[in-house]
Length: 216
Image (cartoon, rainbow, N blue to C red):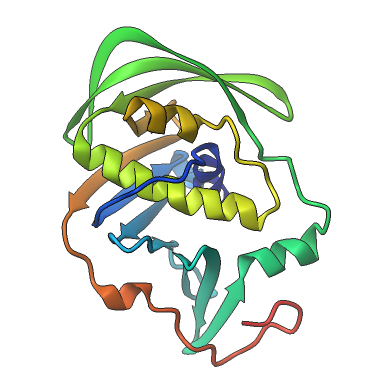
């Protein structure tokens, strides 16, 4: 899950968005993860996490907050991510903060998940120094809509972790009207299906089990 969250925290910028479902993949081999991002035109975003032996879960962005919902053997646990972050790192954790430096087009094009994009050399700075990756960006409205929804999720996730969101890669994408299809070998879009989603998927459930430290 950290791979998807790390990618999300690169893309922090508030935006308007439409409805749809996007399947995203990070990593490769045994470290690969696939998650499903659902988003509606009311500002709600849901990130469904892979099922594990502990159960199934998802993160929900609504009302400006990020909630983690876990279903473990029929018991539902609801956690406020900001409260969890405050317990784990009261002073704020900047280990995953990134600052955009540049994005230079290479002149190449690439198809990802059925969408045509332009290839860029992207540079940004994080706690370890200057980083770079070859990325595929697109102006296709469907790609931009999914990317905007993801950025909204990422912005609230970053805020919940006490991180700054200025001068992010997401700010650059928003300013240029672009959406991200691929980032190096670590992230790519598998599919995007625009259209109406189920409103019930964005309703915060009532917790039936509490975590002593974090509550629901």
